[in-house]
Length: 482
Image (tube, rainbow, N blue to C red):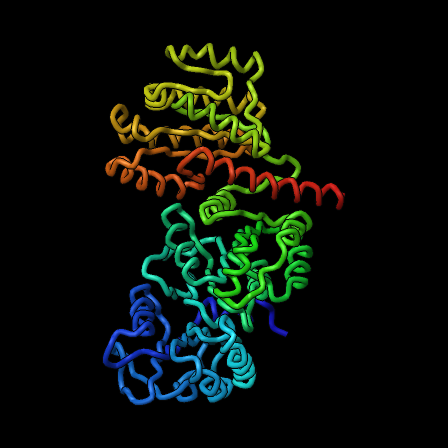
């Protein structure tokens, strides 16, 4: 019997791709998909399928899925809904996965019978069906992408999205924040392949460290629960659940034809399996990033936080906000305060936790003073995580660009001497174009070093609270097991 990894290998690393719905005379959605495949560097074989054309997008075309020279690992299908069932039956076992982008199926009452015909046809045609009513699959390891902009480098974040458009948002917004993906599948109506199937794959996939779901319903909620419970949170699972309110449930029905379920059930799922529930796309991206960059700790959940940066009011507000999230920004003990005071920081600095310093402190002695401050906090402060925050607008006018790089290298050197304490960076900005450009460039450098970077203290707080939730769950499980 094949493993789940072997079963899904043709989807994530397809050697042959058929594209149904491309036009010989105009730019249809399938033509765009072919172009994006080529632009993304796909190295396998592409078979355009067309009833009469000899060539499409410079590639030899074939009349049907049954007539291609080699069997098809992945078929991308974007034609009118009524044509598709007979097409799948005629494939006669030569297609491994078919992703039906077309709509007009179970998301509308008039298409429910047609969706059942589609499922039956996929079974008869010997393939697994993804969709319908979705946008595509993105797999850097297979050099396949359905959207225009996406990271080319494979990463460790595996995504399942029941929404095609939100899947595109996750890729693009995630890329701007430094996420790197092991794969993303938009599943639409989940007529066959569903979230549970892909959860099993990602849990078994060595390339995936953290799993993210945008989900409106679980067709087999019991199976999803059993898989998550058996996994014992060995990989973090982050769920952005659509349709938790009565209005949201109504929207989910019209979107994918799905009944979204009771919000209390999802809360119970989170408590019993350790998965992390988030409320917004922003929180979803932020939480995935913290798990991409930081290794959760069993036995020491993240609770005590130190704040270090330039901006007193920002620190005060963050202290209040973190307290509401269950994160403690507590004053240091007398010995730690005395050690920080001995560093003779300039007037205006505060050393009690939060530690607030004027911007020049970060630049002093090419970042060495900041390094000394960090060393004292790490070695004496009894903390689980340190959040360093920098107001980029202030730095832009007073500090040389190289200073930021020096500062991060110094922070990493200090952290390396104190393994087990998380380090998070917040780069605040004011929207000024030059500052934003510098921030984007610096963010990319820092995330590449394994440090999660956030726009505001609140973003970092929610991410650390999610990390804490996961760490508490795996700590409780290890305690029970012990």
